[in-house]
Image (cartoon, rainbow, N blue to C red):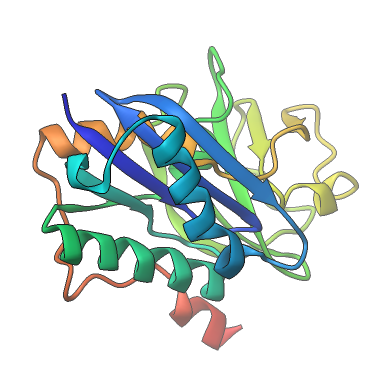
Length: 219
C-alpha cells in the first residue's frame, strides 16, 4: 500500500495531499493572488501528515506537478519535492500540470482544453479526450477569434486562463467551466499511483520543471 506525498504549486494554488493506493486521504490547499507557496507549503505538508497519522519515514514516494505554470511556484514545489526524495531516499514522480487541471472535470464526449493564464491573451494549454488522454501537445498560445476553427467537437475550457476569452470564443461549441480555476494535488493521487506502479520515476539530480521557456522567449 504505497503512501505518496503529492505537491502542486504550479499556479496560485498551493496544494498538497497524502494518498494511499491512489486515493487521497487528506488534501490541503489555498489559492491566493500573492503566491503564498514559500510560506505555506511546508506548513501544509506537516499538517496533512499529522492529520493522516503518517510519518515522513512511511512515505514511499513524492510526486510533484512538473508544469507548465508559474516559474516561482514550480521552483518552490520541485525544490521541496527533490529535497524530500533525496533525504528520505524515495522515488520522485513528475505529473503533468495541465492533465491535473483537465481531470477536475468529467465529460461524456468532446475535448477538454485546460488553460493556465500566462500573460495578456496568452495561455499554457493542451488538449485531452474524455478519458484524459492527451491529443494535442502542451504549448503556449495566443488566443483570438480564429482559434480552434478547425475543431467541430465540443470544447470544454477549464482553468484560470479561460475567463479572458468569454468574448473571444463565442461559438456554441465552447463550454466554459468557470468554477474550476486551478490544478489540485487531489487529482494527483491517482496519476502518481499509476506512475509508481509502473516505476515511472524521474532523476532527482537532473529533473527540471517544464517552463515552456522557449515559447516565452520568442513571444
